[in-house]
Length: 387
Image 1 (cartoon, rainbow, N blue to C red):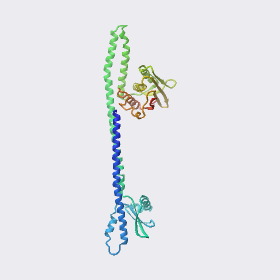
Image 2 (cartoon, helix red, strand yellow):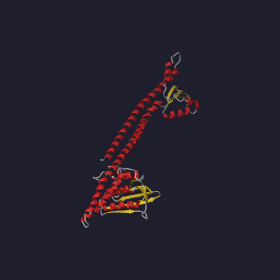
Image 3 (cartoon, helix red, strand yellow):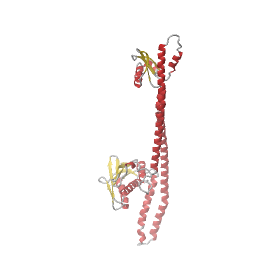
């Protein structure tokens, strides 16, 4: 399991833990809300009993306690109606709206009727009144509290994640750029020394000496090292993009890979008539992208197979597809192929595709993605550039 799979595992564990906390909180809040709802129901039933007692009371009975019970309800909105549904009383509703809007009370009554059955105040067989009510503002707040709470928590976590992710990415970019520049600097000294030794060998060796045959090959390797140093130097800073014939640049990289591939590997470059497809690129860096993709294709097809490269231009966009006949990428791995450290090989750092993505998307403002892949049939990578 690589570092990214471990990170994904921890993310899943944390997500499950968060969901369990949310579910537990919601269940417990609903439990408390249920208890409070029962208490409010009992309060309304007690209020109904008080109304019945008031109706039956006569003489010099002290009514203060009963009126105290009625007035003690300061939270539960209610409407009192007679048998015909006519509103004869209300409490804990918006008094200002009642004065300004004659439809307010009937609308509230309709909502209360739809919410729950009323409490019947039976004065006699032929005389009834009904108490309609809804949840108090406190109970409504309690029901929605966990959702509001966790919305705020999730928003905070999202902002914190984006902030730290941006800061971490900026730090990684600074480290990446610093390492690239330092690598280019460190390569400069031995390359210069090698060039000097080649010149010295040319002066010391006599014509016809067998060692002279080695010098051109050594010079090719020095040129390759100089190209690598130039790439590292450019990746450590913002490169200049120039309008280039993409066909010629891709052909150079194709020739380089073709010389190092097995004779059973067929690499073919397809381009529009005239072999001229323009795009704004940094030639040294873009060549690095093509080489990494072609090396990846070679690893995928093994000792034999074919690699087809397609170039086409549509409007202001240039498309470059690299299609191999290799083993393909499983659907579950498609999103991971561009991550640093991802590799299907036992050896290697797994940086080729990650580097290609960085060069294409950050330096060339283009796109690179897996256009198509089937296990056992092959994979097609697509690059989209501005023309």
